[in-house]
Image (tube, rainbow, N blue to C red; front, side, top):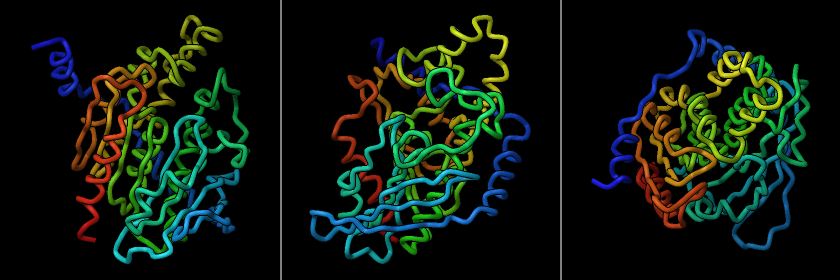
Length: 319
């Protein structure tokens, strides 16, 4: 057995204890009840687009509690009657929302909503008032209060985006896709929403926080390390910070995901440590498959797009 095989054996058996608190489900259930107080107020404006057979729209809707969220809705002129709709979430501060990214779905007659993450876009300003600022990026905004934490709002925006695509498409069933931050958002949304057909989760961020913060060599997890280094070198606030993060940890939400999930891992990933993806994978509550890519870092090979297409087809062909 070579070193890689030995490491894979360890990873395939790596299932750490979840860090969720006793009121974890109560917390998220309460937010979903609160969400019903806020209308979506969806606005749609059609774009002129160069590709025939495709309609593209700019969309805006009310986020959770505050902020207008921008999205791009792409639909084939002929929507397949029995197909679901789809929502795609972007990576950390990587939100071009280009319509062509949806084409592998649209060609199958599936309408798709691309969603901005609040604050990470020039069109989706974050208007929430946080009790503390961020030390380096978004990961520490409001981090001492789970109810006012940045990603609490982001998760609920994503939850609402599923209702938006249902309203736009008339579809009940929806599937989700995302990579890195988008992968974590897809898992969280699948855990919180109903009638999710499947989830495509690539190189996920937002999972197994304590392990990931200790291992990540670059990327947003290092914002937590930066906070400790600059603002709390004695780690006096460590327990409070990781308590807040436990409520948005995709590993803790994973057991509520009952739809089929295809997850990918770059085994040389310096941004989202591979071990954290396995911690998420092993806690998923439904049918699941994983693809590992030995020579890849925070990326996946193009062949993985074919893997995703096969996975989608295996679950929607009978719909």
